[in-house]
Image 1 (cartoon, rainbow, N blue to C red):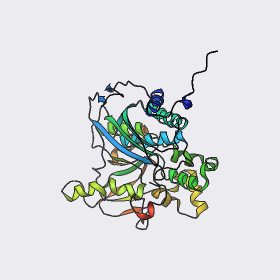
Image 2 (image 1 turned 180 degrees about the vertical axis):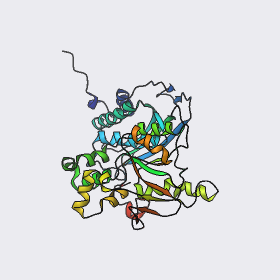
Image 3 (image 1 turned 90 degrees about the vertical axis):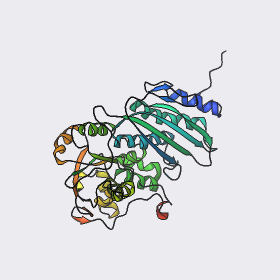
Image 4 (image 1 turned 120 degrees about the horizontal axis):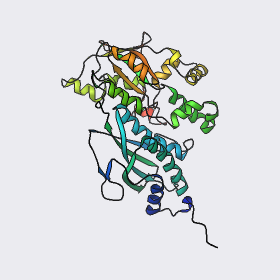
Length: 357
C-alpha cells in the first residue's frame, strides 16, 4: 500500500518548508517581472512610473490574534498597502513580504495566512516578488507594494487642494472603528451582531478601481488631491490640506497652499446603520464617531466642483462631504471640531491598545 502524501500542514517547519508553503499559494512568474523569487533580487519590468509604499503590520499593535484569523491577518497586511496604491491612482503590480515569526507559528497557521493574502493578491493580479524570513518574539509583518500609474493619466497626490474645491470620500467612514470596538469587547462573537463593522475592520477592501478612475478624470483637468483614510477624517483631512505633516513643511518652504480649511457636511444619512446603532447605544454623536474612525481605507479627496457630476455617476460609493475653504479652521455641520483629536501612533495614551487609525 502506497502511503498518502503528507498534507501541507504536516510539512516540516523550516525555511525550506515555509518557502514551499509560500510557493503553493503564489505564482513564481508574472507579466511585470523579468526575474521573480529565488534569486538575490527580483527584476521588475517597468514601462510607466511606479508608485511604491510600505507598511508594518504588528501583533498587538495593529491586530490581535484573539479575533484575527490567519486568513484575516494575511488579507489585511496586504490590503493596507494596496490602499496606498489606490490613493495614488495606481494599478497594483507586485509586492515583497518580510515575516518575523514567533515560536507559536506552525505550518497550518502559515497555510491559512498565505491563503488569505494570496486571495487578495490574485484579485488584484499582484506578484509576490520576494522578501525575507526570520525568527521574532512577536509576529512581525512588513509588506512593500508597487504599482504603475493609470493610462491615460498620472499619479495622484495629497497636495493641490484649492479654496472652493469639493471634498469627497469613496467608501464607508467610521465603520471599521465600530468593528474594532466590538471585537475588542466581544472577540469574534461580535461578528454575529456587528457583521459589516467587523468585516470592515478585519477585511478592508482597497478602493483600487475608484483610484484609477480618479486618476483618469484628472488627465485633461486639474487632478484631484487624494489620500487613503487610515487614521480617520479628523486626522487625515489636515494632511490632505497641508495643515500637518510633510505637506505643511513643504508649504513653509514655499510649496503648497497656506491657510486652507474645510467646511465638512456629513449628515447622519450618509453613515452606515451599524455606526448609527453603536453611537446610539453608547450615547455618542455618530458624526463625531465617523470623523474619528480610522482604518476604513476609504479614499478622501478634493476636486474642482465641475468634476462632481461625472465622478458621482462613474464611481460607486462616491459622496460629497463639503468644501475646501480659504480659512484655516475645520468645521463639520457648522460646528468647530477643536474638541476632537484623532489617532497618533506615538502618543502614549494611544499606544496602550490596538490602533484605531
